[in-house]
Length: 215
Ligand code: ATP
Image 1 (cartoon, rainbow, N blue to C red):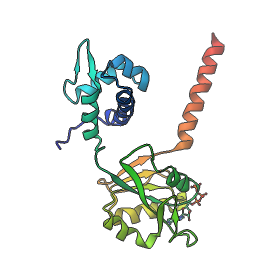
Image 2 (image 1 turned 90 degrees about the vertical axis):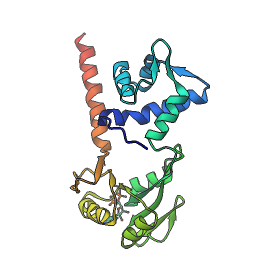
Image 3 (image 1 turned 45 degrees about the vertical axis):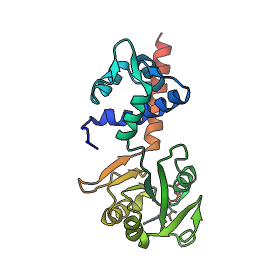
Image 4 (image 1 turned 60 degrees about the vertical axis):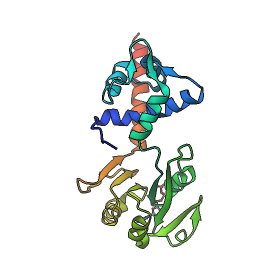
């Protein structure tokens, strides 16, 4: 597949579009306008048109976008027709919740192995996923050809664990710890900081409230 160079902000919005298109397709809708998409995914329609323009002229004026062809196009871009196995490192409360969740709504991502240092849980199967000792990391990552790992260890172990994962060949880390990890430029780190996201929401609600009381 030819790789298309698209801006990061656009790439981030692709899964949103994709999920909504799946719903439209299931409802039997053949076309969708950028205004309709905009309302559904909460992205302004100018950005949607710009995003889509990176993929060539997929929309027709006055007609909107063809749902099926957009869907198959995004499917390829997002690599949705291949199964991606992901590792999870650190099977604490959050790790267990993610194991249990295991992206059931997606047919093509799954956590296929988990790692921990706690002997009480290694060697067991939790929510259908085997939990290995950290000493098996390198072997499993290589056997299962895994390149992505979810990191849910305590902050104190985050960097050390990252170093181990990088050494084992991991190329993408979804970091649930609040630590800013250092990793080689060839490794991508996606930070997921739930507390910060909530703080942002609280901030917006508070400023909405302040605006309302100014009126
Ligand atoms: P959470 O932050 O998910 O709520 P928790 O409070 O249940 O976690 P933590 O102390 O944050 O527990 O640890 C999360 C998990 O990470 C535990 O299962 C722990 O055994 C594991 N862990 C700790 N250090 C390491 C390490 N160096 N490598 C792998 N796993 C580790």
